[in-house]
Length: 192
Image 1 (tube, rainbow, N blue to C red):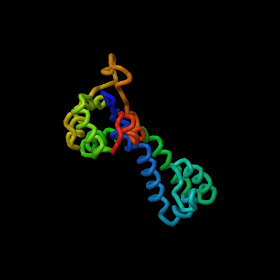
Image 2: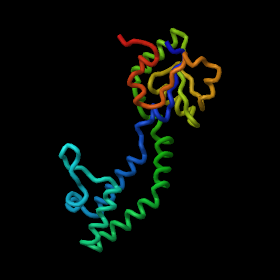
Image 3: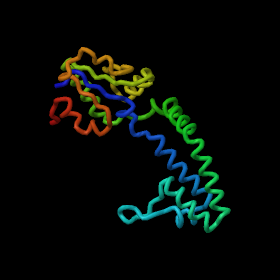
Image 4: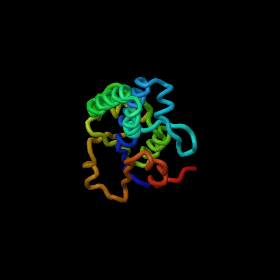
């Protein structure tokens, strides 16, 4: 069994928050508000992989606006102007969203794989192992998040430097959510 189990917080615990995906969805909603539901359904929907109607990506909408502008110059121009403004402010919005998520919502969320982490924590405490969460600047926030989710025996480190001197055979690092699918096998345990 591994003696040191490491989780990279940004990718494992908060990896599902993707501000770019959220922002893209908000951009699509903005286009829908401008053109109305009827025009949106007719112009900005396409056939999906399984034959269902899906909303175009923001990039595809950009191309469609050029086509729409040829048919309705006033509407096409208005949409294009608003899309340009939307893209100009993108980085500012993304930064606001990241900051808002970290400051207001991070500690309120549930931890992915919480039950497994609780069991693993107990096993490591009996076997003498360590559970370490690596997080850039948010040490206190990560500690609060983990405690809120029932974990008690863990360490939070700023970077991976704490692994210097550790035997590679004794360490497993979970850097992505999909890595945790085989949590028990990677730690060196069989789940009953």
